[in-house]
Length: 289
Image (cartoon, rainbow, N blue to C red; front, top):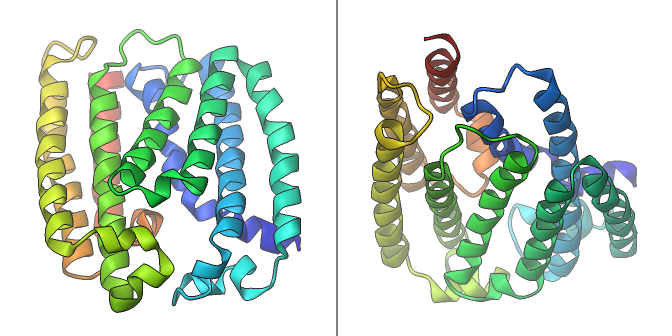
């Protein structure tokens, strides 16, 4: 039962919560323990809240997941975990994580509550509304960043990063919809009714627009945001962002991946190498030079 609960909470997807540390990193406080330790505690609470959302979402999607070629192997659709057990676990986690969030920091607690409420609204309603479903996913990523900002006395964190985060989340969200549409084909509507409202040409056009906007927003951030080094060396990180976007496009459109972004983040070696180079360059520019 415990193993089934943990699998349903999907720890691999908690890698998306790494954006929580954006404020800490870009405000040049990554190595200050007075900020790092509270952020680590906040990250743990955010991951547990994410797991709570997955428990609830999988209970609601139980019948549809049984028709999915991959999701039917999850603990709930496969029968390993009973829905009542998942609901009980989600209730206990909520009663623990929410008060702890406010004890850590009131602003952080408010963002954590907003994150939970947004994803509950997504699970019950928003995922059935075309375009709004992906916008809600993007809002969740922005709240991840906002949760980190709440725990850091921000001095250099630029609002441009909120824009970049929103666009990046839209890219991932529409890429996932595209993957689902290709994977399920004629059975797409049986698994997720909202997929009937999308088409591959529409998703490809939206993805193209979002990628272009992401590149422009990040480029503008690197040379116009307040608090960055005056030497504009952050512009040297733009090629890494370009490669990451282009590599992800290649993976979703040529190799048919993208249904689980965390698999690419953890499994695609060129993508990982590029990410490490981007992180290293940012650290050197902000903390060393």
